[in-house]
Image (cartoon, rainbow over all chains, first blue to last red; front, side, top):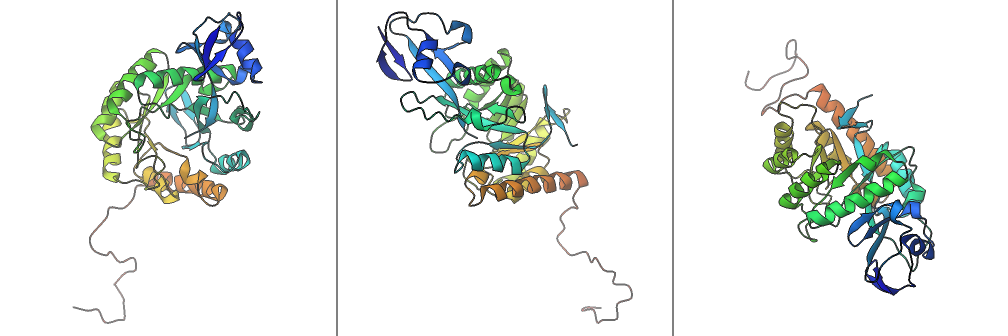
Length: 65
Length: 272
């Protein structure tokens, strides 16, 4: 199925979860925050299977003022 | 210790320092240390998924020492600012930092001036207060706008000295003084933090002399030739300004007032 992650289209296998996406990118779930379809997804949503067309933002902190 | 409060946050140091634009994380760490700050600001951005370098800002900030203040920089609508605020809070909750309760709200008008959009700021303030945030809202130095943002529920209004990163200092001290006067009318402990435009230590001093509760800055330190030394200068500038404000300065006068008595002079005095 096709999803969008941080603005980039991506094809993933059925059943892919947010946790799997994060770990595939060698990131730690505690050091990112995630939006699913423009709504904050808290940690309790990380193990639910994603759906075709889902839009995901994976963010973290960077330097800023 | 000279403390103040922003709603449920006890502030132990009046200098808020940003984490952007340092030559390296190591320089940032040393500059933050030299500034004496307790509160540091951070931004929320997309994670690099393909070329993640394994270096995260979070690894370079002592979360037991600093209270992290996430900003909504780069947001041009209230809706986006609210999304970013929620993401920042989630990240800080996961990392057990006290900053999970607050946000530095920026709703900007355009990329060139980075001046705040007052309507978007007020809309976002109302929504974020409903979401339980302690909102510190970046504002222009227009006193009436500042009052409207306070009325929308902001726990602190942060008027700009001059545009973000411009280094022009406090361009309109009279407006900052009016912001302070109106925001603190019948509410003297209402916290006002001058944010943006600081170029050098004397700018911080001026803001504090006017009666600001604190100053937030980033580029003035991060882009100084010696960021660590400038961080120390900012710390001293803040202390000087705060002490001056507390001391009560003399009024400005047109003519001189001699410090040494004229009585007993042995010299010729013109006109006498």
